[in-house]
Length: 120
Image (cartoon, rainbow, N blue to C red):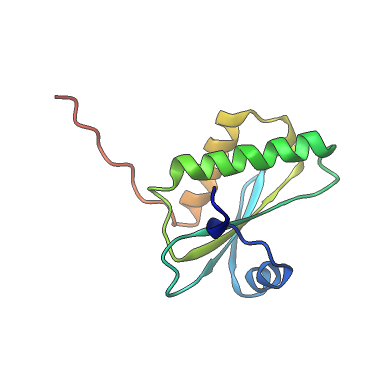
């Protein structure tokens, strides 16, 4: 995930919390904030110290970034996405994280339908 695709500043996080819409399941809370004029989407990650040690927290963040990388063709552009991991995310593998994030993004209606692959 390139730096242009990340939300880093505390001010931007706070703005998304105040003005954005939130969607959640058991593992993740996703805040979606529209950014007109922004040609790509950006993600911001928040994983609390309550979830585990640094190794576990960094692993969760890697899984989330990789999931967004794999879903980037389907995610609506022009939005900021703030993802907050909840405790159950600590016990999840890569595929579980991707499935859970996909579910939350579908609930938020920011995920395009997958394209049908022709098998000729």
